[in-house]
Length: 133
Length: 244
Image 1 (cartoon, chains in turn cyan, red):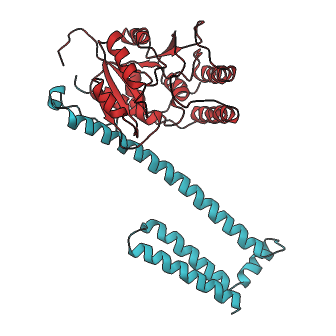
Image 2 (cartoon, helix red, strand yellow):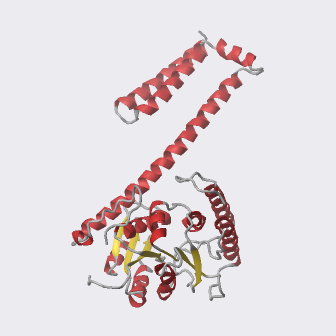
Image 3 (tube, chains in turn purple, blue):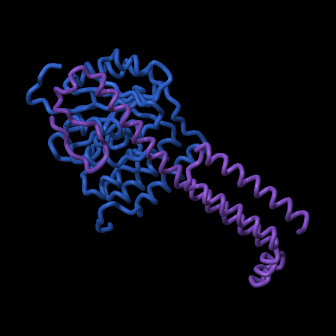
């Protein structure tokens, strides 16, 4: 193995260790762990069997083989960013609904005669229905 | 709270973010000229005394734990109105821009069922409003775009001074955008076959507030809203509707 390959394998193992540590402390959800572990495995495989890159580059008519690795890395990063954009949008929406529900519930709690209003719940989810007036 | 017969249940929703200075005046003016209506202040995670002055002003108050932005705050008010059986809701800004004596003008058409959404416009007829030329141009362009997308003529698409009738209230409580809600909701309610109208109102220049459209900011705003409107026009709906 070339020295650079050893270095890459060590780096990959460090990443794997970090991922595992966060998983163990339950600071990262399992659904994300698979992604990072697959990435680590991919990096190790390409570092050890670097002829895969050369052959693939040749098959794809890529003159400078490492640019294939950069390209794949770039695609991976873009996909990851896109995934995060979707996740952030989803979380922001959930966050908004929760904040609204919390605000509405606090107002209901503070009202002394809450039951007098027909017991309408401040739920904003589901098909909208008129509360009892 | 005395029992009122025959008086339709109308809720005035006042979204407020750090408006402790202007809010008391707004609530006092509403109390004087629109006393038949209930008032709800949605405190959008303010860091100042907005909640305190809202309570002191005899309004019902929703304190949102975090700042959601105008759309999220107003939607919380719509949800409240819907779950408490209000027939109509009016959005009135806390910065003193909207005049309390104009509220009945907006409420009247939705209560009589002539329209589902009524927008208070500064440009329908000549009014005393004098915004900067840049601001007027931005509003004119967005109003034109909204009119085209909605199939209804609108002259003040960014006006936040609006009344919503029962059918519209159910819709906006469930579907209200966080970003640029004012222009975006116009084509959205129109696609639902809800009827939109404008009435001419006077507005004051903002007493306080930061909504300044200067230079690149105006361009950025126009591009963002235009994109949002166009994307919204082709967005997949929960229910299949014929296009047009």
